[in-house]
Image (cartoon, rainbow, N blue to C red; front, side):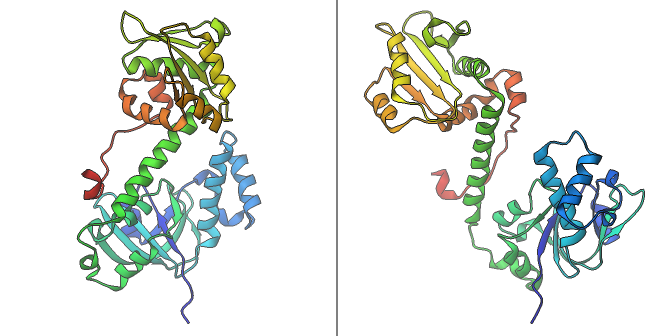
Length: 328
């Protein structure tokens, strides 16, 4: 019975090294020879933390995982999928050698590879391309490994693709969802209390409102006063950055600060309890915005936000493919 083989994806900044040198390689040259580190995660983590003392905890875990897998979990015979940028090809091979260290090289941690097939990106579904487009240098290919294996064994694999690639819809939604998650996480991480109030005031200005921030701790809990133009009504805004859901009595306190003719806006990064949502539904002069709705507004008005907030939440405008049904 054929031994089960793992499939790995890898990226590089040197396509020629991989394709002409018949190797795969990673950097981290400051760590020295990975084979000289005890073959366990704790030893790799300790060595990494010593070598890069300024590294963040999350980054250490991700990097250590890639380094340990490259040195110890990859096996001869495992498959490798490498998307080359210079020619926009997908290169599939198998690992042909044990771990090696090349002193002084830009990518010193290496393994020999036998390249088996070089295929155009058009031969694969969008979902498969999305998986090997991972932001990490080294990663396991799982969801679409069968598609890459089929491509190895079938020269006519491209003909088997459906007329419309339905993985496009799933891929596009994954990209959109990951972007939404990123925005909400950055808002929660970087903007607490008064800082979030300033951001909401800037977002309202991007939406066409004139805004005035209240003094810290004053004005009966009203954080921002907004106007659409020179005339009433005024909009009283309360902002909460707390993690827990907003309760009904908290919204009632906003209502208590409003005068006749005022409108209210309540903004939270979290959500509302069932009773609070019912209260909002029965109080049309107060609009509640939760974290998910706030993210949609950020996406809609992102290019009008102040530069400091765009730097805080760095996004790039891109076009992504969708299914034809999604266009209708």
